[in-house]
Image (cartoon, rainbow, N blue to C red; front, side, top):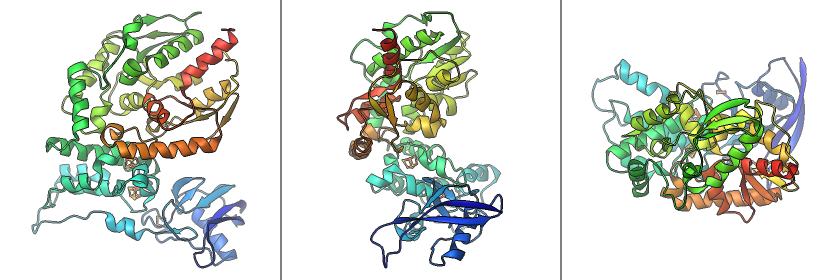
Length: 481
Ligand code: SF4
Ligand code: SF4
Ligand code: FES
């Protein structure tokens, strides 16, 4: 037996005005699940309310938040110091939340009066979408649902599952659009928290958006972006000299060469925020990495994939792969979170793709001087959820920050075509970031995604800076510049 301590959020609507936290100490077997801990606490205090049924990860009833992240209590190993809370949904009592309204919203099939059953190929397509256990973990974290009437991730999953089912009698793409298909920010939180590893953004939402595109129902602003990419190879209009206009194809380091990468710039850093990419090159010069920048690279295609406009995506991929392989490049560095996630997951590249923060934290880099300000960090969704990168930017930031304060991760609202297609939703999520930034008391916000930087800057009075910019500031301070 081992002894575990932690806290549980308690709320009884008959006596409490708000939730409070109670400590617990229990003795459980080695390898115990969170559900075993809850049962042990229940023996001490029978008023503790929580749900469970199958105890095998199949019914979805036991989902709670553990240290802030949704988890199935029956499947997740208990550890010491756990903070156990209900999912971020209306609470009935203690760890029990309202599930019925959310489950009732999930669309069900309208089957034909026939004996057709899906064949093997059709079943294979349905499979990634049919394992849902209706735990509503995804619903509890979805940022779009916090600020719009979006029906939610698992309902979109169900819509796509129905769209693929030959027994369904109706075409429901217009329903899906009315239910908020275009409000999803592609933040990927639903995918990360799903205990059944259902890839809702890629396998349901983007596919439904493809159907909408085939039916001529893509939002006009998204269509305009696709036209721009088709015409110019870029997803943003550029006003000034682009990054690629300003740099030679090879940038040599100041000292000995310790490595070599190709640089995939991305439309935003190329056309809208070229100074940030120039700052990155200055950092690379100081850490000893040769950077090759093929001038014939184009948009990665992310704005098209996320909005379901995939008609010419294969040509874009072929071109971008060729520009790097033709130069013998084996590692491609990205700085834009969205480009990095797209190259890693939507391409099959013969080269390795690494975010700049992965590259800089895998090698010994010179120490920058410390800046005086207090910084906080905004996690770009396509870096945190899309690439699983959380520690690396923090590690770099801690080396240069006078002090660092954490801010809870939350989508800023700029992704998935929402900033262009659903500006009111993007603004509402941006305002939520404003409040979170204020609460940290930081002097400045650091991020690394150009879309986040651009969007958050509109929703805070604090400076929003790129991580590479402040690393360079640290080096320049050390150099006495
Ligand atoms: S990707 Fe994000 S916004 Fe879209 S459904 Fe999932 S959690 Fe919601
Ligand atoms: S999609 Fe995943 S997270 Fe969402 S309700 Fe179903 S099982 Fe739970
Ligand atoms: S008790 Fe059924 S999933 Fe946990």
